[in-house]
Image 1 (cartoon, helix red, strand yellow):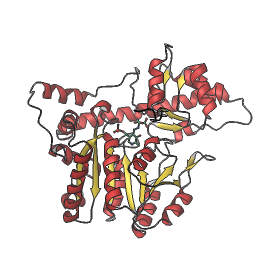
Image 2 (cartoon, helix red, strand yellow):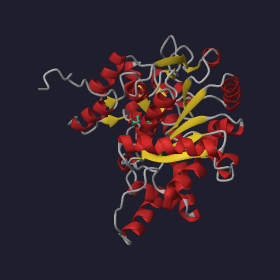
Image 3 (cartoon, protein in one colour):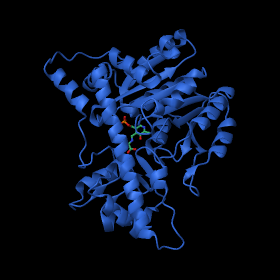
Image 4 (cartoon, helix red, strand yellow):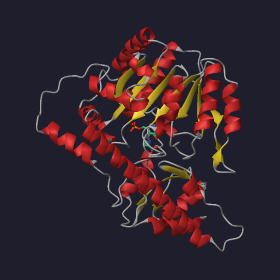
Length: 400
Ligand SMILES: Cc1[nH+]cc(COP(=O)(O)O)c(/C=N/[C@@H](CC(=O)O)C(=O)O)c1O
């Protein structure tokens, strides 16, 4: 009956992570999947989340369906976190927000909505982008193209080429943009570059789709939302997929949101209705627990502050580990000629660095040194810690 079904080749990220789990070596190091590990190499339970969870568990109640749009307090907390509670767009009620199954669910609901209401639009994603972006939008039946983004020569941004390509797109083209902490490159636009891009997007009447999965891992919670707020200030209509997997360390609870900033409240109501319909057709309604945790933390000033402080410490730990890795590699390759520039370990931001190692070098890192990075060369800096950073530096020095 199912003989014709294709064998699944595995996912470049999730399957490699499963291979890591199966690897029997005690000194293996996981820099593959975009997960934040603490300095002991553990996946943390954040203090504010632990407190919110114990409060919930001391008051266990029935488990009714959430509405298709999700938990009301959660949706309000998402808008306040992304745009600021006092933002005109929030106050005017012109943002439609639904709770989704993580950021992945937000992208899927958004893609299905776009296929239905912008059927002639094509999608443009950065070159490179998160592996699953193309899969989700193509899976919704949309044509996916790329715009120039990463400059392999400088290991930085090809901004002029990116802007020119986007400026040439037809009106209502969907432009997928990483709001901060670009995955896989760790290369972001500056505030000045975002301002230029917003002008082009507005003038060309494009339809941006922002993915913010790492808010707080770049420069800070509000700083990392600069692009969203600049677009909303400019009166642009756009989509935002957000995720709390990393910033709340709630990966398995599948907590995300899809927001659509609209010109006015009436259009936001129309959009919300069809987002509900799209959720119903995909999975009917979202899960409760993760949304209760996040809304409890974000709606308590004391817990929100504790969460923000811990997220700041997580960001700073990654930055420290980037510096330690850079210093360790430079010390080991100082006598090389020609000198190899590895500044990308400290210039790139957020969780990821695009190291430029070839697939074969990535294989050597894994097979000979037990260091797992993606075959694309992406390294998750959040997997580094005081115990393993010198071994990772030695491994990179050996293969570079
Ligand atoms: C940019 C981006 N957007 C969305 C997601 C999905 O997150 P969710 O857990 O559905 O809220 C991820 C996850 N990225 C990491 C894990 C994965 O590939 O699923 C990663 O890049 O390793 C992203 O990196």
